[in-house]
Amino acid sequence: MEGAMYIAEKIREPAQINAVALKAYARVADAWGLSLKEAAGLADMSESTWKRAKKPDFAGELTKDQLLRLSAVIGIYKSLELYFSEPLARSWFTRPNTGPLFGGSRPVDTAIDGGLPQILAVRTYLDALRGGA
Image 1 (cartoon, rainbow, N blue to C red):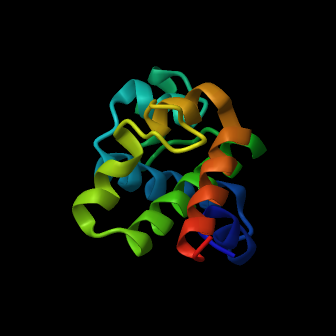
Image 2 (cartoon, rainbow, N blue to C red):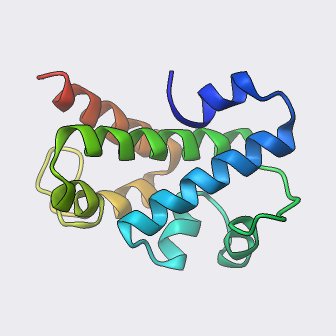
């Protein structure tokens, strides 16, 4: 088990779960160089909510969908870091991709447009690549 959902099992307070998940997600978004709009869209938040959410004193709650999104994105980041060397691992999500899930689009764009199902599909795709499929 990885990411925010693993953390959720170890930390029982929702505010702590949200804080840890948001902190990890903010680091991933920064590592990938996501724009404010991209980071907000991937997390299913408005840009103004994302600006507030990435601050340590954020008191809002994440929905189950948002927490699952953050968990999956953190898992995508981990898979990329394990599968590729650093330059490609950091840019893969924001580069055009001709793979079967992306059709020449950037994975970040397909993930934002397709929501949680597409984010999970990207995660599964990377896990399969990493596993030798």
